[in-house]
Image (cartoon, rainbow, N blue to C red):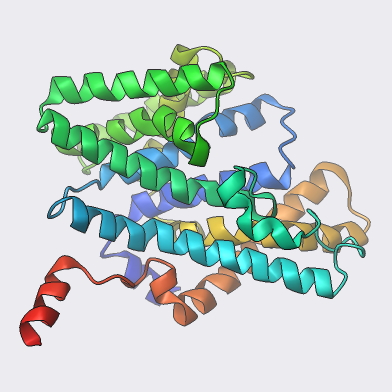
Length: 344
């Protein structure tokens, strides 16, 4: 594990830890089959995806124009989406041919037409979490557009972000869906923007003596999230306020701890876990169930088993498909394209 830590040491350790905690919360949510029963369940749901948008906003950059920006985000998000989308379809074909659905080994029965679902519906039945790749790509483009439109002036940028976020929230409350998750992306834009503003205008992310107060602040943040996490997100103040409190709690906790080998490693490759974990939950649950374990214990062991298999999958997939998993650029960057033109 020392080699893994050396690789991560060039990054911001606690950000990887925060990503790891986030993806573990996502995995737990899907282990529960979306069965939200306890205040802790609702608390985790309130900030698990907003945290991802926030973390992405921390590292937002304009780069060298819209073309270069879109190319980079295509490498980081759309290509992994297509990879996992096609991989999901291939897995469905194999499971169908082997009769795994009839045997109860996996769920969501395969349809040969599901390859085209993305063009006609938002229901990605076999690997639903892939929606996030599309949404995060849209959020990046939305914020880039605002940056250009406002010329990076803070007040107009804030007003534009709030306006788009409020519109997205109203669309959710009225149950109005815009194709390709654009309504979700609009609602998530404020979390992304908060990350951007914090990184640009404060030093809160840098280590300092102020970190000493985290031990006193974190319990208060945890109480707010646990107590006030909305069951139905129909109030924008509780929706955004509780989510931001949860984000602050996870960032503060990760900053206080710094590095946890397994969780930080998973965090570094969290998008790989996001794209694969839906393949793992049903088989892991089946194995745990055959041991005669039921209820909450079954959920916890299924969660832990899925984490273990993810740890085994990450290095294999990264080694075999680096360009499809945002580890290398499938589409060349602008400077590389210039070099190839000049060389020809």
